[in-house]
Length: 493
Image 1 (cartoon, rainbow, N blue to C red):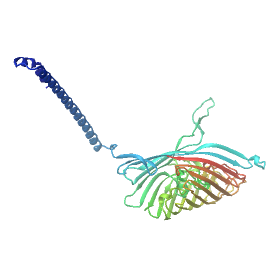
Image 2 (cartoon, helix red, strand yellow; image 1 turned 90 degrees about the vertical axis):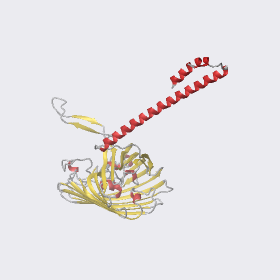
Image 3 (cartoon, rainbow, N blue to C red; image 1 turned 30 degrees about the horizontal axis):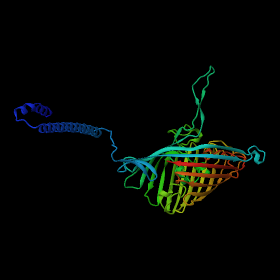
Image 4 (spheres, one colour; image 1 turned 180 degrees about the horizontal axis):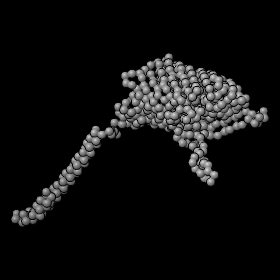
């Protein structure tokens, strides 16, 4: 069309020559009209070309999408598009989820940083305060990270988390011969900050029933404070009772059946690899951790809610509690290795209300047979690993009573106190068989458990006959008093 118009314009002088003369103004008008028509034709041609290219691009995209859909339908791979997924902050958590809620992924971080002062009396044996041993320093008590959620449906849930090790150590490289005399090389291996698996479990709720199956590595279901995550505990650290008798933050591998009708009763029971079986393989005692390993275990717990919300029971505290809550629980674990066995039984109760009041108590009893002549304490908590003639071949029975309380003022400040009485057997020479523990402190909640500061002091009038490093308590076996001060900041993302 542009060429035709150009030819018409070029022939215009000849046509004009054969026609009658026209005024100069009329000729100029005709030329301007022809130019405008040419520009209009060029714009129409450009628009047509643009429409054609857009149509080709849409056709290519449709062919590609159809091919991907065909491949997904006819193979084991199923593709999920970003359409229908949302990401944001909901109910205090970061979450990525599908529109129907069948897929959710919630990441989190948990950080605790503290300063610790440990004062142990008469460590130098001079009988005065100048002989006390005082240790002070900072530590990253916890740096934990993980994620949880559900896949395919809300009935299939998962939970995974790791913590970073606080320890340093040496690794012996066997088989190396650095000299003519043979031997092995000892290589320094700093383990501080190395991720260590804590929890890893899958749970499936059987549809239209109140039953679920849970498989993996988890808390041993014995007492409430031990089953509660360290993110939501009342004090800076779990009690000595929880760490010594139930092994605190240690976990067990097992399979459990859960009954929960979301009413007043919850029950959990199953088999495990014994207490403290975290991160072990299928081998039994003594090939899987030596004397500190078990062949198998049986554990379970039942909880009865008199009133309140189960959601508020996910802590040892009264933070954001919406109504009065009262729950009583009983639990236990029996673990066996070779000819030795250890049974731990406990009962506990917790009351919390919307005014910020918390009352919590527990009673724990441990019965251990010592057919191998081993006693019950070690630096890692409850154990049966160190020979002691005082209990060789004899059963031992030990127990602990704990009571604690707190009250939140103006949703920010929470003074709290705790008392523990423990009766132990097979202790180090010169130590008392009974231990009193008095703990007191105050929390300041900037944003609930997610950002809080804690000042805490723990006083042991008779000391502790062994190290309990998870609670930052060192041995004072002579029965001398010790006191522990902790200042901690907690951050949860």
